[in-house]
Length: 266
Figure 1 (tube, rainbow, N blue to C red):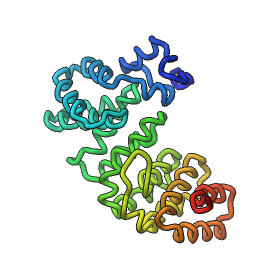
Figure 2 (figure 1 turned 180 degrees about the vertical axis):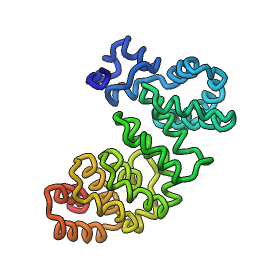
Figure 3 (figure 1 turned 120 degrees about the vertical axis):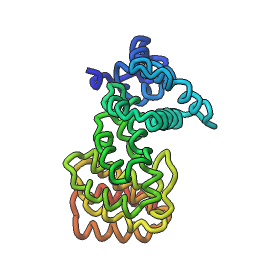
Protein backbone atom coordinates (compact mmCIF):
# COMPACT_ATOMS: atom_id res chain seq x y z
CA UNK A 1 0.00 0.00 0.00
CA UNK A 2 1.18 3.54 -0.81
CA UNK A 3 0.72 4.86 2.72
CA UNK A 4 3.27 2.36 4.02
CA UNK A 5 6.05 3.83 1.88
CA UNK A 6 8.34 6.08 3.88
CA UNK A 7 9.53 7.93 0.80
CA UNK A 8 12.98 9.24 -0.05
CA UNK A 9 14.69 11.86 2.08
CA UNK A 10 15.86 13.88 -0.92
CA UNK A 11 14.52 14.38 -4.43
CA UNK A 12 17.55 12.77 -6.04
CA UNK A 13 16.87 9.58 -4.10
CA UNK A 14 13.32 9.14 -5.39
CA UNK A 15 13.29 6.03 -7.63
CA UNK A 16 12.58 6.84 -11.28
CA UNK A 17 9.59 4.50 -11.35
CA UNK A 18 8.05 6.12 -8.25
CA UNK A 19 8.44 9.61 -9.72
CA UNK A 20 6.90 8.38 -12.98
CA UNK A 21 3.90 7.00 -11.09
CA UNK A 22 3.54 10.23 -9.11
CA UNK A 23 3.56 12.34 -12.28
CA UNK A 24 1.03 9.99 -13.86
CA UNK A 25 -1.24 10.38 -10.84
CA UNK A 26 -1.18 6.66 -10.15
CA UNK A 27 -0.03 6.86 -6.52
CA UNK A 28 0.01 9.30 -3.60
CA UNK A 29 3.10 11.08 -2.36
CA UNK A 30 4.55 9.42 0.74
CA UNK A 31 6.15 12.48 2.31
CA UNK A 32 6.90 16.18 1.80
CA UNK A 33 9.97 15.44 -0.34
CA UNK A 34 7.85 13.56 -2.87
CA UNK A 35 5.11 16.20 -2.65
CA UNK A 36 7.61 18.89 -3.63
CA UNK A 37 9.12 16.76 -6.40
CA UNK A 38 5.97 16.17 -8.43
CA UNK A 39 5.88 17.99 -11.78
CA UNK A 40 2.38 19.44 -11.46
CA UNK A 41 2.28 20.59 -15.09
CA UNK A 42 3.04 17.07 -16.27
CA UNK A 43 0.55 15.63 -13.79
CA UNK A 44 -2.07 18.06 -15.11
CA UNK A 45 -1.43 16.99 -18.68
CA UNK A 46 -1.71 13.32 -17.79
CA UNK A 47 -4.86 13.96 -15.74
CA UNK A 48 -6.65 15.85 -18.50
CA UNK A 49 -5.74 13.14 -21.02
CA UNK A 50 -7.11 10.52 -18.63
CA UNK A 51 -10.39 12.42 -18.28
CA UNK A 52 -10.64 13.48 -21.93
CA UNK A 53 -10.38 17.21 -21.17
CA UNK A 54 -7.31 17.99 -23.30
CA UNK A 55 -8.82 21.36 -24.27
CA UNK A 56 -8.45 22.49 -20.65
CA UNK A 57 -4.66 22.19 -20.69
CA UNK A 58 -3.68 25.36 -22.55
CA UNK A 59 -5.81 27.87 -20.56
CA UNK A 60 -4.77 26.35 -17.22
CA UNK A 61 -1.09 26.36 -18.15
CA UNK A 62 -1.44 29.98 -19.24
CA UNK A 63 -2.65 30.82 -15.75
CA UNK A 64 0.28 28.96 -14.18
CA UNK A 65 2.80 30.62 -16.48
CA UNK A 66 1.35 34.03 -15.54
CA UNK A 67 2.29 33.61 -11.89
CA UNK A 68 4.83 36.13 -10.57
CA UNK A 69 6.38 33.39 -8.47
CA UNK A 70 5.95 29.69 -9.08
CA UNK A 71 6.07 27.62 -5.90
CA UNK A 72 4.40 24.29 -5.16
CA UNK A 73 1.56 26.12 -3.41
CA UNK A 74 1.04 28.88 -5.98
CA UNK A 75 1.08 26.38 -8.85
CA UNK A 76 -1.30 24.13 -6.92
CA UNK A 77 -3.71 27.02 -6.43
CA UNK A 78 -3.42 28.22 -10.05
CA UNK A 79 -4.20 24.77 -11.42
CA UNK A 80 -7.10 24.21 -9.05
CA UNK A 81 -8.70 27.60 -9.70
CA UNK A 82 -7.88 27.36 -13.39
CA UNK A 83 -9.79 24.11 -13.76
CA UNK A 84 -12.57 25.61 -11.62
CA UNK A 85 -12.99 28.49 -14.08
CA UNK A 86 -13.44 25.99 -16.91
CA UNK A 87 -15.75 23.77 -14.86
CA UNK A 88 -18.05 26.74 -14.18
CA UNK A 89 -17.88 27.97 -17.77
CA UNK A 90 -18.68 24.53 -19.21
CA UNK A 91 -21.02 23.39 -16.42
CA UNK A 92 -18.66 20.47 -15.90
CA UNK A 93 -19.44 19.74 -12.23
CA UNK A 94 -18.97 16.02 -12.81
CA UNK A 95 -15.23 16.56 -13.19
CA UNK A 96 -15.02 17.99 -9.67
CA UNK A 97 -16.66 14.87 -8.28
CA UNK A 98 -14.22 12.64 -10.15
CA UNK A 99 -11.13 14.57 -9.06
CA UNK A 100 -12.32 14.75 -5.44
CA UNK A 101 -11.73 11.01 -5.06
CA UNK A 102 -8.70 10.68 -7.33
CA UNK A 103 -5.87 8.43 -6.16
CA UNK A 104 -3.35 11.29 -6.46
CA UNK A 105 -3.23 13.53 -3.40
CA UNK A 106 -2.17 16.53 -5.50
CA UNK A 107 -5.18 16.08 -7.75
CA UNK A 108 -7.41 16.04 -4.66
CA UNK A 109 -5.70 19.28 -3.62
CA UNK A 110 -6.78 20.82 -6.94
CA UNK A 111 -10.30 19.54 -6.32
CA UNK A 112 -10.26 21.19 -2.89
CA UNK A 113 -9.62 24.54 -4.58
CA UNK A 114 -12.53 23.81 -6.93
CA UNK A 115 -14.76 23.66 -3.84
CA UNK A 116 -13.20 26.26 -1.56
CA UNK A 117 -12.93 28.97 -4.21
CA UNK A 118 -16.23 28.31 -5.96
CA UNK A 119 -18.12 31.54 -5.39
CA UNK A 120 -21.24 30.13 -7.04
CA UNK A 121 -21.67 28.14 -3.81
CA UNK A 122 -22.65 29.71 -0.50
CA UNK A 123 -20.04 29.87 2.23
CA UNK A 124 -22.00 27.29 4.22
CA UNK A 125 -22.14 24.93 1.26
CA UNK A 126 -18.39 25.27 0.66
CA UNK A 127 -17.68 24.45 4.30
CA UNK A 128 -19.94 21.42 4.07
CA UNK A 129 -18.27 20.13 0.92
CA UNK A 130 -14.72 20.87 2.06
CA UNK A 131 -15.12 18.66 5.14
CA UNK A 132 -14.22 15.49 3.22
CA UNK A 133 -10.92 17.12 2.24
CA UNK A 134 -10.36 18.32 5.81
CA UNK A 135 -10.62 14.68 6.93
CA UNK A 136 -8.47 13.28 4.11
CA UNK A 137 -5.85 10.75 5.20
CA UNK A 138 -3.15 12.63 3.32
CA UNK A 139 -1.38 15.51 5.07
CA UNK A 140 -1.11 17.60 1.91
CA UNK A 141 -4.81 17.53 1.15
CA UNK A 142 -5.65 18.47 4.75
CA UNK A 143 -3.33 21.49 4.63
CA UNK A 144 -4.59 22.71 1.26
CA UNK A 145 -8.22 22.27 2.32
CA UNK A 146 -8.09 25.03 4.94
CA UNK A 147 -5.99 27.27 2.69
CA UNK A 148 -8.70 27.23 0.02
CA UNK A 149 -11.24 28.80 2.39
CA UNK A 150 -8.91 31.07 4.32
CA UNK A 151 -9.54 34.25 2.24
CA UNK A 152 -13.31 33.95 2.68
CA UNK A 153 -12.97 33.08 6.34
CA UNK A 154 -11.05 36.34 6.81
CA UNK A 155 -13.88 38.27 5.15
CA UNK A 156 -16.63 36.45 7.06
CA UNK A 157 -15.24 35.86 10.55
CA UNK A 158 -18.52 35.65 12.48
CA UNK A 159 -20.28 33.38 9.99
CA UNK A 160 -17.23 31.14 9.66
CA UNK A 161 -16.72 30.77 13.41
CA UNK A 162 -20.40 29.96 13.86
CA UNK A 163 -20.01 27.05 11.43
CA UNK A 164 -16.60 25.90 12.68
CA UNK A 165 -17.60 25.94 16.34
CA UNK A 166 -19.87 22.99 15.53
CA UNK A 167 -16.94 21.14 13.96
CA UNK A 168 -15.11 21.14 17.31
CA UNK A 169 -17.41 18.31 18.45
CA UNK A 170 -16.73 16.17 15.39
CA UNK A 171 -15.50 12.63 16.07
CA UNK A 172 -12.71 13.01 13.49
CA UNK A 173 -9.63 14.73 14.91
CA UNK A 174 -8.72 16.07 11.46
CA UNK A 175 -12.02 17.94 11.24
CA UNK A 176 -11.59 19.37 14.75
CA UNK A 177 -8.08 20.46 13.90
CA UNK A 178 -9.33 22.14 10.69
CA UNK A 179 -11.60 24.39 12.79
CA UNK A 180 -8.62 25.70 14.71
CA UNK A 181 -5.98 25.72 11.99
CA UNK A 182 -7.94 27.62 9.35
CA UNK A 183 -8.68 30.48 11.75
CA UNK A 184 -5.19 31.00 13.17
CA UNK A 185 -4.56 34.77 13.42
CA UNK A 186 -1.19 34.52 11.69
CA UNK A 187 -1.22 31.07 10.16
CA UNK A 188 1.34 29.38 7.94
CA UNK A 189 1.88 30.01 4.22
CA UNK A 190 -1.02 32.46 4.18
CA UNK A 191 -2.06 36.03 4.90
CA UNK A 192 -2.79 37.03 8.47
CA UNK A 193 -6.33 37.67 9.67
CA UNK A 194 -6.14 41.21 11.04
CA UNK A 195 -9.48 41.00 12.84
CA UNK A 196 -8.37 37.99 14.88
CA UNK A 197 -4.94 39.46 15.57
CA UNK A 198 -6.58 42.49 17.16
CA UNK A 199 -9.54 40.70 18.73
CA UNK A 200 -8.60 37.03 19.29
CA UNK A 201 -11.52 36.63 21.69
CA UNK A 202 -13.69 36.12 18.62
CA UNK A 203 -12.10 32.69 18.27
CA UNK A 204 -12.98 31.42 21.74
CA UNK A 205 -16.08 29.61 20.48
CA UNK A 206 -13.66 27.35 18.60
CA UNK A 207 -10.81 27.22 21.11
CA UNK A 208 -12.77 26.61 24.33
CA UNK A 209 -14.23 23.22 23.29
CA UNK A 210 -10.73 22.09 22.23
CA UNK A 211 -8.79 23.17 25.30
CA UNK A 212 -8.44 19.60 26.56
CA UNK A 213 -8.76 17.70 23.29
CA UNK A 214 -7.27 14.21 23.43
CA UNK A 215 -5.58 14.53 20.02
CA UNK A 216 -2.02 15.87 19.95
CA UNK A 217 -2.69 17.00 16.36
CA UNK A 218 -5.50 19.24 17.65
CA UNK A 219 -3.54 20.33 20.72
CA UNK A 220 -0.66 21.58 18.56
CA UNK A 221 -3.04 23.64 16.44
CA UNK A 222 -4.79 25.22 19.44
CA UNK A 223 -1.44 26.00 21.07
CA UNK A 224 -0.18 27.56 17.85
CA UNK A 225 -3.41 29.56 17.51
CA UNK A 226 -2.90 31.15 20.92
CA UNK A 227 0.81 31.65 20.27
CA UNK A 228 -0.14 33.57 17.12
CA UNK A 229 -2.47 35.73 19.19
CA UNK A 230 0.17 36.32 21.87
CA UNK A 231 2.28 38.29 19.41
CA UNK A 232 -0.32 41.05 19.23
CA UNK A 233 -2.47 40.47 22.34
CA UNK A 234 -0.25 38.84 24.99
CA UNK A 235 -2.44 39.83 27.94
CA UNK A 236 -5.45 38.11 26.40
CA UNK A 237 -3.51 34.87 25.93
CA UNK A 238 -2.12 34.93 29.47
CA UNK A 239 -5.62 35.46 30.85
CA UNK A 240 -7.07 32.60 28.78
CA UNK A 241 -4.27 30.24 29.76
CA UNK A 242 -4.62 31.06 33.47
CA UNK A 243 -8.35 30.43 33.28
CA UNK A 244 -7.92 27.14 31.44
CA UNK A 245 -5.37 25.85 33.94
CA UNK A 246 -7.75 26.62 36.82
CA UNK A 247 -10.84 25.13 35.19
CA UNK A 248 -9.21 22.28 33.25
CA UNK A 249 -5.85 21.26 34.81
CA UNK A 250 -5.49 18.22 32.54
CA UNK A 251 -2.29 17.01 30.90
CA UNK A 252 -3.73 18.02 27.52
CA UNK A 253 -4.53 21.58 28.63
CA UNK A 254 -1.11 21.98 30.22
CA UNK A 255 0.52 20.95 26.95
CA UNK A 256 -1.57 23.47 24.98
CA UNK A 257 -0.81 26.26 27.44
CA UNK A 258 2.93 25.59 27.31
CA UNK A 259 2.83 25.80 23.53
CA UNK A 260 0.64 28.91 23.65
CA UNK A 261 3.00 30.82 25.96
CA UNK A 262 6.30 29.90 24.30
CA UNK A 263 6.79 33.31 22.67
CA UNK A 264 5.80 35.24 25.79
CA UNK A 265 8.18 33.20 27.93
CA UNK A 266 11.21 33.64 25.69
